[in-house]
Image (cartoon, rainbow, N blue to C red; front, side):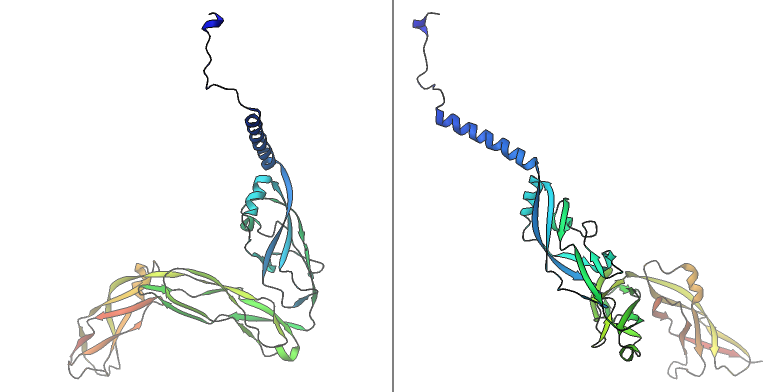
Length: 321
């Protein structure tokens, strides 16, 4: 093809220097960002802290810090994502979970015992915590082990029942002057009110200080309550006993069996438990209007709630020789 036949489109131009520079700058910035996000850095974060189970028999040598200074080593991407979590939630510091040193006087803070992942949202290598040790001194006085009791007021939703609450720990140690703790054998928590209960409960309640100069070894206790749905059952029970019967002759009861309707929690009731029901009548308590005797249960399993006895009254026929 000759040079005369060659044509160039008038709109087809080579990129200008400014545009080429901008494209190179964008590419370079992207590569720098990728490198920066993958590189490892160390950054300091300020984390608020709250305390549980502060030793009551000890006193801090200085006020407990409200903020922990934490140096975290991680990739640039993780550190950037951690930065987006600000302001951080409060770190829960439980003295029962912290290792004590120096004859139990000092508490060492370590990343293994503190749940920083719940605060930052990512795993990171904690290089340093400041302060890294909380210093205490012993309070003077005597100590005594006492029972922990929780005033509990439970009202279940209809069709449900609650089992006996479990308190943990069941005991704690109190400290103070001998005259102050001599007559103390129980320490109470704040009252726990539960209404419309239909599912299991696990909660913590604060201990109430018995008085000035008396220090509990714990600040709170755990309470667990299992809730079961009530199941309805029925069984036939033989009316087997007549109380206060003084006459002779053969005694016949009609009907000789009654049907007992009752409820039991979940799967607690077993078929063999029906043998624990015992029905009786009292010959001294006749219904003058019907000339019949009311049936009552003088023995029932300990984990049932009786709803109805049918029939409620029976007749007694005495055949004398």
